[in-house]
Each structure stands twice: as C-alpha cells, then as structure tokens.
Image (tube, rainbow, N blue to C red; front, side):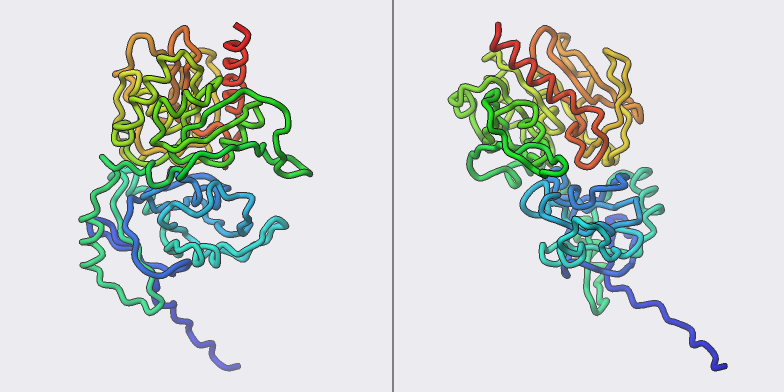
Length: 389
C-alpha cells in the first residue's frame, strides 16, 4: 500500500490586525481588499444575515461566536435594510454550503457581491476573550487571495482609525427621503402582508431603522411614516402624528444628538406619546437631560437577560449597542424601568406620568426571542388612550 502523503495547510488569504499589534491569520471569503473598523462579538446562534444588514453595526466588524455560519444561506426576506452595513465578519469555520428551503443564495457569494470582507478559520474564543478583557479594539481586516500582507501598514491603519466616539453614523444610514410603511410581520403561510385597515398615525425617525421594527409597528396597529434622522420638529409635527417612534442606529449618541435632541425636545413639549429603541432610547435620554457613555465591549447578542424593575419580570432580549445611558444622570422625573442582569447597565426608562418610554434592546427579535413584543402594543395603547382622552 502506498504511503499517504502529508497534507499541507493552505496559505493564509486573510489577516486581521489589531491596533495593539496582535495578528490573526485565516482564510478570506467575500470581497477582497482592506477595511478598518471597530471589532465586536455577537453571541446569537441565528440571524447572521439580519446582523450583517442591521444599520446599528455601521463602522464595525462582527466576530460570530457561534461556529455554524452560512448553513441557511441568504434570502431577500431576511434583509433588515437594502445592503449589508457591518464592515465585515470573523468566523471560526469557513461558511458552509446552505441547506435550507428558504435559501436563494450562498452567503459567501452574497458577501462578495455586496463588498464585505471576511475571514474564517480564526480562534474566535481567544478573540472574544481579548475583546472582553481589553475592550473593543480597532482593527484592519484584509483579504488577498495571494496572501500578501503588509503587516506594519495594517497595524498602522488600525491605530490611525479614530473610532466610534464622537462619530455620527446615523446620517450615513438614514433614509434619503420620507416614505410610508405598511408591511407587517412575517407569518406562515402568507409571509409578509400589508396593513389594509386604518391605524394610529406614527412618525418613525430613522436613525438606522431595521425593517422588522417597522413591521412590528405596523402589526401593532400603526400607520407608519418614516422620516430621515435630520427631520426637524416642524417636519414631524406637520404629519399630525398620534405618536413618534425613535429608531435604532449606529455611532455615538452624543454626536447624533447635536441635531436630534432639539427635535425630540420639541416633540416632548407637544405631549405626544414617544417610544424609542436602542439609539432612539439614548436620544430620548439625552433629550431628557441624561448622559451616555462608551462601553468596554458593548452588548451584542440574542440572549441578554433584562429585568423589568417595576414588575420583577426577566426578559431574554436581543441587543446591539456599544454606548449606554448613564443611569446616575437620569433626572428625578425619569424612571429607570429595565436593567441588564449581566452588568447592571441601563436598559429602559419612562417619564413619570407621561406616555414616553424607551428601551435599549431590540424587542422586534430579529434575530432573538420575542419576550418584549408587548412594548409595541404598549405604544399602541398609549396612542389609543390619548385619542380617547
């Protein structure tokens, strides 16, 4: 019997360079080239397509701690926005061939067409520990099929990147002009259906809104008009809304607040029900007089326990944020309603005696559990009560 020839490992075709000089090599997929961003990790076991197309990930490369990436392929129904927004992805195993009846394309091909740079074969456990211990690093991610990397130049690029603090990214991911939204949540067997009955008139300010959040609003009885992040109070109030929704989004809330906070303050003065999510939660807190701070590594995943301090109930939630509201700066008339059971950080507020509230997490569950959908219904009930009263 002939001797078996030893197999040689393929040469690296991708490189992840951290600002501290740490280098990870692996196999590249998706687009070729170099991208510079902040590195975070996401612990969700499902929803890689939704995560990559979530505008809240602008300026970030996502490390997926779950190893099975690509196994359900991609399809247009699962896009949270028209194009991927996350800069790239890091995975342990190279994406697998899709095996799902809903798949219309392969993840690797989709990422290449969409211009996203990715790396596989990385020790994501080691990388995640580094992020948790040292904070979210600035990185340069390169993919070259020939495996030619200028390591010194990549590290220099990572070190030179200015980071997310002070960066307003909402203006980069918001809609260019206003539009109407009437599509509701996906349901078997019809899929997505349209609202055909009258509903509460809601203006959604788009700081980077996910489609499934807008679908949840429509399913909760809302007739939604979406306005750009830079909309003024006059723009909003001209719609004569029953309520105003403040969407999720990326970047430093203090930077976006330069133009968003004056608008929200004027809306609050009009005594209209207000509901905010994620960046919208932070925008509301800033408008009420609180402050926000950068977190060490943020919260990114679909398994985050949050306690409702008013009911004692614990919800498992989906999160994606690198900044948080400093609960110590909340004014006396603002009640802290929810806290993270991981680190005690603020996850929800309401204004005492007014139909104004917000949460840090993503209650639309895309991806993630559906424990918090009731918040959309609460918003609808607040508008109904205002109309009746």
